[in-house]
Structures are given as structure tokens and as C-alpha cells.
Length: 370
Ligand code: 13P
Ligand code: 13P
Ligand code: MG
Ligand code: MG
Image (cartoon, rainbow, N blue to C red; front, side, top):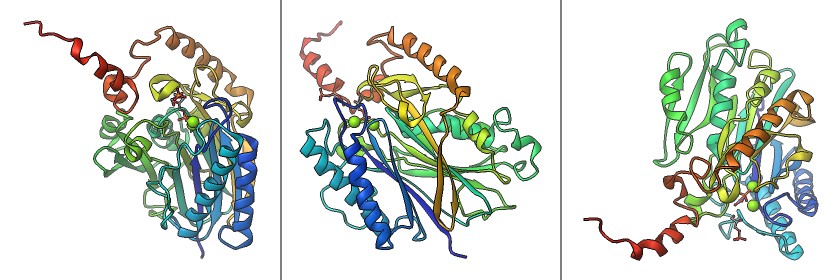
């Protein structure tokens, strides 16, 4: 049976009046490019959207992960959107387009990528989550809760198919190494790593032996670090993730429950501050207060024969109002710290920002204490 692939590829190629929101003209350009690609048989279906200033391309096809045609399509969409952004004089036009020429794969060129190839189930439910003003490690806590925390996911306890637990693939993004950990047996070791979310990030989650193919991921997170490519701060790495749900996997409601706690993530203003992650509908994915607070938006689809059905805008539910209210209270509380840590990130995380330039200017002023 032919497998289906979902590819979510995203980039910030410019926004209006700062890092606020994608201009609709950029989405129109992307729709045009992806529509052409669909007619040419490069992809089978797509949905274009945004989260804050990040242009998000959700594509389905049967070409597997790392397909040159699919990545090339995304690259063309970002290039054309960059041209439009420049013509409109948008802020940060081409921000995440860090390399010149496409040569087969979009990895390492600036955009973020989350891709999963899988065998379609009957009633294949899949959710796409998009974050703005934060980093890939922001997914660690919710993805852990979804697939390993019985207080979040009832299915881990009461569903025989979920009872065995799941396998987490964690990347050390500093050392370019990875490790697989099995939950619940290795839960404490897993947490020892992923609690340090700026370095250890959950890349994928796999099923254990049982009702699903063990080599097909159930979740995938984009882990690209822009600063490692550009050598300096050019924007946060605003990640995206794909998570499959239902029929023996965590239910969609269990997946969403993990976002009902607005946990602290790093990013926000100048990529230099900790703040709460606020779940919002696409319409409210506009980061304005102190360039934030950081947002997560989610779209739910069904997939049939590699075609998208939907989406439903998952956080457009008053049941998330309290999470949003709490996020606003936390935002206020954190802001009161101004330039002080832990609102501002620790020095080690400020390495790629403009702060080291300020500290350098002060170097000569220091004298030995003796
Ligand atoms: P983005 O990463 O969303 O472009 O935001 C950058 C920034 O510096 C916000 O203050
Ligand atoms: P300027 O370079 O326009 O001052 O913006 C800083 C910023 O937004 C960091 O991303
Ligand atoms: Mg930006
Ligand atoms: Mg952004």
C-alpha cells in the first residue's frame, strides 16, 4: 500500500510593521506556487496558513520525507513570497532564507521542516501545531505530556493499545547526536534530558510493537536552529509539529489538553525572553505585545488517499479561555522583571543575540579587584 507523507515546511519571509503577522499577499503567492505544484503532480494537496510572522505550508503527497520535488516546491514558494515581501517593503523580507541556491533539500537553508511518512489508517486524524516567538524545545513539555503523562492522557491508563507507552527520539542539537528512550520505563532519564529544552529536543515519537508499524512516527517536530546556520541571531526558530491521534493513539482532546497549561518558553522579544506559550486560533496568532507573548496555533485534519479534509482551528474553543487568561497574567508578571533574568534569558542563551556586542563595549572598563 502506498504510504502518505505530510510535509509541514515554514519560514518567516517578512511581515507587517515588525515581527507581527504574515501579509495576506505572501499567502496568496504561496497558494499559487503550491497550486501549480499540485497540477504538476509534485504534491497531492496543501493548505497555506500562518502563525504570527511565519508562513506555513502544509503539504501532502506520496513521495516520502526529504523529497526534492516537495522541498523544491516549498523553496520556490518562499522565494516568490520573499520577492513580494521586498516589493511591498515588508519588515524582515526573506528573514529565514539563509542560503542562495536550492540544491535538492531545504534542510539547513533556513526554513523549519516537520515531515512524517505513514500508512493511512481508516479515519486518519492528524494535527499540525505551529508556534511563533519561541524555539523547538517549546514542544518538549506538551509532547511529553501527550505520549507519557497519564495525568494528561487517559488512554495511557485505560486503552489497551496505549498502555505499552511510546518511544521518544531526542536530539542533542548542540552535538548533533540522538538517542531513543522508551516510556514509561525510561521516563526519568528522558526528563533528565528534555527538561533542558534549549539543548535536548524531542524530534519524533514512535509506537512500540503492537497495532501500528514501529518505523512510522506518530509525531515529528521541526528542530532547525537558525542561529547555527547564520552564525548570529536572525529570529527565533519558531517550530512546527505534526501529531497523529485517535484509534489507539492519544485522542485529539488528549493532544490538545497538553496545551491547556501555558508553560514558560524562551523567545518573545528579540528571542531573548522567557514567557508563557498562549494557545490561540489562527486569527489571534498575531504577536504584538512585546512581540508576543509566544503563541501556539493548531489545525486538525483528516487524511484520505493523501488528501486533506478540514481544517478545524483547534484552539478556537472557549475551553482554552482560562489558559489564555493565565498566559496573560504570567505575561504581565514576567514583564515586570524588565531586563532581569529569568525574564531575560541566561547569558549562555544570549550568545547569538546582540547582547554580546554590548558587553564587548564594556570590556575595557573592568579593572582587577586584586
Ligand atoms: P521572529 O523569530 O518571529 O521573526 O521574531 C523575532 C524577534 O526578534 C521578535 O522580537
Ligand atoms: P531591528 O534590527 O529592526 O532594530 O530589530 C530588532 C529585532 O526585531 C530583532 O529581531
Ligand atoms: Mg520575524
Ligand atoms: Mg516568527
